[in-house]
Image (cartoon, rainbow, N blue to C red; front, side):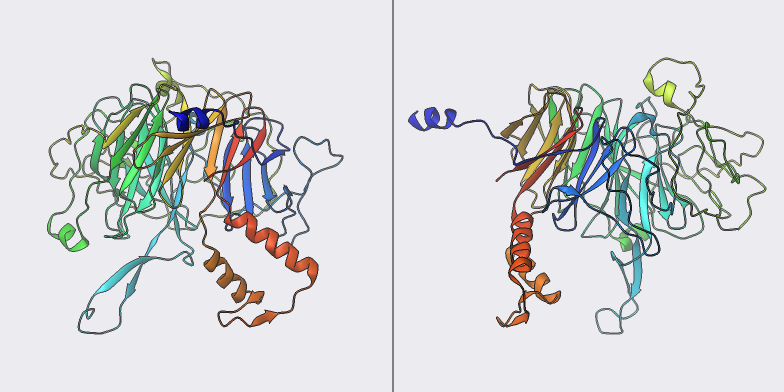
Length: 496
């Protein structure tokens, strides 16, 4: 009893730092480069790249360009700001506020001949590989699509989770299963459902259709966010209700088993056909443009509606104009079909019945039943979003409409901390990476700074450079939480 009375008298936590510079609400925060940098994005399209050692915006350089602008969006500037070069673009239906997800594409490597690996090939994923997968909501907002970059081609289609109306996709996450090295797409829907789809094996000749392997409905309101544990065995969802739920990702078949039993997809008869329009040289600036696929594709979808490929699609690469990103003008309001519900207003899928080609139907598997979640916690606090799992898998954090940041135990889903400083709703939260001091020391030795493994000084440091390195290492080893809110401010918290 005395211990409880003592703990209740602890003063409320306060943020370690406040970053000011955005003029509108913050919708994205992300730690990068081993906690030395923080990237924040706001509703006006501004992205700030912060150096955490100095808590200031960092001057970014390109290989052949001058230094980009370091003037903050909230500051009045005279003249034009230098802009980065645009390398790739992917227009999507962004009106549902669903962020994209990225993972590296698997690479097939033939192992050297040996008794165990002879005649076999390993499928691995390397960050050095230039090819990545990007998952976004589809033009039919009840589906998701996976594109491959830098090719900018449609690679996979994630069909509707069930034949009934699931609502639009509200959250999407790409994850690699470490055991089978298969890629999964996890989605959360407006209709309170969450689903896990397995991407098929890449044969390079057709648009693959993902297979539904898990379906659950733990929420009573639309799902707002989700994230996966580092071991890719559990994922968590939060929604507009007060529920935080944990889900077990089912065991996946190996590639040898997958060859014996090819995946079949549940039939979806009421889904409209999806069309892939041809590339236009310069789309209208006020129109919601669709994504172009530049390869000749043979659609062999099983349960999904047919994908129509225009007859005049030719095998030619997309042309990109490497021009600076110009300031975007106010876009004209698009005309949507009348209908009930929010998702009907946001559906912008276009169909071309003249050029549509029906895909040959494949045998379908029985419908997957809705399964209960692994764990569920009614937190009594509605509107928790931007759920993020820490890199050690022990904690998860959410940002609330009530302006509070809440931290939960990933094992029990119990609330372990509440962080309050913002006066308005918190829209984006993120954990810093949990780093080890020994690994940081080794990386410093590889860079020729500090001590080597044998305790030898690799490079002589001045007093100032040593102080800067120590301050940088201290910043990297701390357990950070960043929160961006409607007030345009970013708070940095040091947690356990």
